Length: 370
Image (cartoon, rainbow, N blue to C red; front, top):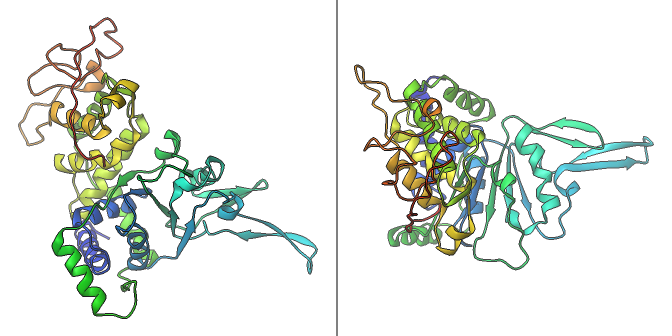
């Protein structure tokens, strides 16, 4: 499948899903980008905004098998992966597959299950396989997890550890629809007898696999690769950040940017692809320090500062190449300063090559966490 066909298929998918889900097309495009990049998606929003319907609609439109797992405090790991059951007829133990063996797995309200049960997903999400009693079983291809969680309830929930949040390529939210969107929701409900809308399949499993191959052939200019590295490095030297973006997070942004270009029908990445995917890929991977939490600074604030301070490279022919951040220990700024320059507020004092720089003032603001 070429990139133009991939862009057309992507628009068809988004259009079909829009018939069931009242959501911003940008949100649907971001979720589809994660799927094309072979990543997993975490949806966090208040109840009733359509998170479960979104996951089911994607599975239907993609023509893939679907399983929903309702996470509860008494859910066991075997309830997800499956277990060996004794067969009286054969006198042997046989493996009974759990709901994880599907193309699309909805982990509904994932933060309601204890950490031991949440961890049952780690091998599946990271290696696309499960191991039970020493035997390893491959998962279907394609395979991805769409998990949901509600941010408004704390009692009886278990927050996802940082290591598990890192398994999700993208974290996003639907938000409340506009008034016109809610009116459309009521009009659609009035015209059918079923509570849940239905949509038709646009692709099948083989076409989805072909679609997931398209980002592998999307070109990323070396200067844009440096730009991705510089964005990740910036977060590691911010005074508000306890744990910055890991090399795996940088790689995920690279993959997401390529997938975003494929969704747009291009075989090359532009800076806007990187900027658009920086928030959903980076924000949930940041761990802020206690001082930042007290000041109600959000990870989105840090990402916004990184995007605002790291210079976007000129990729047109004849433009000078930007300085490589990995070589010089910091990201070039629009004003020529480095993260350790006193004039740059909100940044950690310096990269490791300059450990004695003075702490700088911090800068925060309010924006919605993606």
